[in-house]
Structure formats: structure tokens, C-alpha cells
Length: 195
Image (cartoon, rainbow, N blue to C red; front, side, top):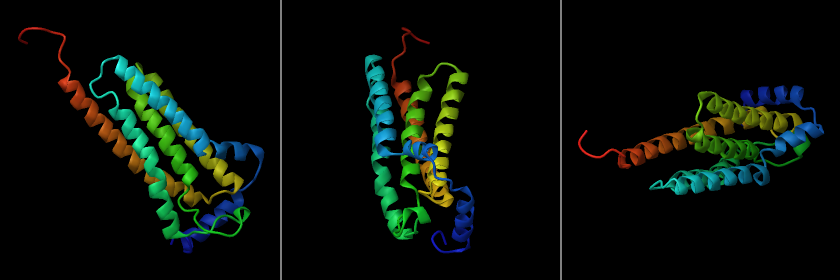
């Protein structure tokens, strides 16, 4: 269905109206490259780990490690799906298959999404948290626009990656929430004596 059905044909018609290759589209698509997105996540991982360790957190390494493992798992999940579906790419990409789901979209969604999840608890105001989430969503939308407009991917390739990554990031968020809840409940109180 994703490669040859009515949905794929509708997706291809939509793509035909959206493709306008230009330098801006290429630059936006590049935000989903491993060489761009993963270093952003790496800086956040190191920063969060260093701050947590300096603060004396018992398991300072847990959240950054979980996010790094999730990022490393992206190719292990995406590549088999690409092989299984074997969808041909847009005309500008020439012959070949392996475009569904979009690896660039998944890389961007997990790298920027995991970085956002790690930074959210460290921001003090609700406005700062909202701004960070909005920035993450905007960057991911720009990557998607760049990929489709440049003709690197069909729109459905991008949507499939977003669906998969939403599930993965929800799992990371739940893990981080449980981990921070457990570690904070084990943190000794600064109060002494009976409560």
C-alpha cells in the first residue's frame, strides 16, 4: 500500500505539486543529515551529563545514555523498514528503492527531539519550555519541507518517519519521567529529624 497502492499514487501527485528544488530546500533537508543533527544531540548529551554529575545526581549518566542508545537504534529500525517496503524514490532521485520511511526525517526527529526531552527539565520557566518545544517542532517541519520540496522524499515517507519517531520519543519521555521520579524519591532530604 505504501509503495504501490492508491495512497502512494495520491502521495506522488501531491509531491509533484510540492517539488521545487532550490538551494533553500537543500539547506533545510541538510538539517536532517547525520553530520548536522547528531552533533547537536552530542553537545546536549555531554552538557546534560556534566551538569548532572556536578550536581551530584546518583545516576547522572542514565538520561544521556538512554537518548544516545535511541539515536543509535534509528538505523537499525529504519533500514529494515526501507528494505521491506522497497518504495521507489521521487523522479529526481533516479532509479532505486528504499525511500520509505525517511531516514533523514527520523534522524532529525530523534536527535532534536531527544535533545529537547533532555533539556526540558533543566529550563526554569514554562515559557522557556514552550519555546524549546516550538523550536524543535519548527526545525523538524523545516527538515520535512526541505526533503519534500527538494524531491529527496515523498510526503508519505516523512509522515511515516514522524509516526515511528513519535512512538520512540514517547517511550524515551516515559523512561526519563520514571527514572527521574525514582532518583528524586531516593534523594535524601535536607531536613533532619522526623517529619
